[in-house]
Length: 257
Image (cartoon, rainbow, N blue to C red):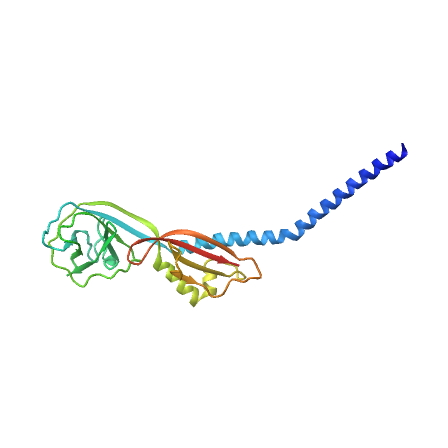
């Protein structure tokens, strides 16, 4: 009987000792791993914050107008005269009119085809289109659009085609991302401060086209990411407007360490 009681006591003590060792091991792991986990969580927050700031600093306003060319007015001409949508310098803003400062920042498309334009004598807006053109003509303008206007177009009489949808939205512009790229190489530390990054944090970022072709459209890379510490990388699909006013799709990739 005494041997049985001693065995029970021994088993109980063994369980307690094993439990204490197990708990001690968990505490040890927590003490060792918690700082690393906290640092990684902090870097992930910084990465998410940086992506939002890069996208936010790449935004600008884009106005879209829809013109319904119901029938061709000029059967033998290769242009439309849309002077009714122009606002001369000094005129007050009016819906459905393009302000004077945007005359050099226009883009005209229809069914994916972009058409050149030419402003003559400050009151005639000629858009080069095929003869007998009919359909929807989309006009977009923004200070971040810089297409090359046509040198000259044939004379066309003005016609007040009906205006449809007119909206202004915030868009991501390739030109603004290029401005960040210039700042990245010219004033890296200043850009870090502007984007709200800690001094001990470094980053690279890239913009790829929809096929992820090499080289990237934009590559901001001062240094290779280190191999001795964790590097946090995130890819974000984006839709942006190029300098000609075309909608493009791509990917923003940001590295932080």
